[in-house]
Image 1 (spheres, one colour):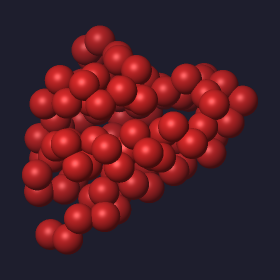
Image 2 (cartoon, rainbow, N blue to C red):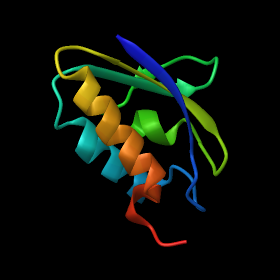
Image 3 (cartoon, rainbow, N blue to C red):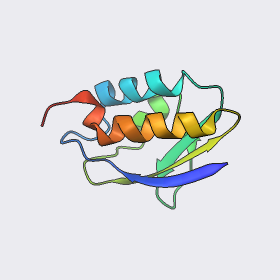
Length: 90
């Protein structure tokens, strides 16, 4: 199991389009993936409503926990999409 804190860096935060892109990546992996506001409850990161309820704006620090056979690959892919601002231009 791996657990990391990540900061949302895109201008609009984790809105519907960004959440959808995050989920598309997350669903490529078999491992369990959970996400939540730092020091808060974690939710299944493969569900759109779960992500939207986080209301994570720019600068929000989220905790990402991955657990399973492909957890390392999942963690790297999800860190990458967040760092890339979900493919959005700033």
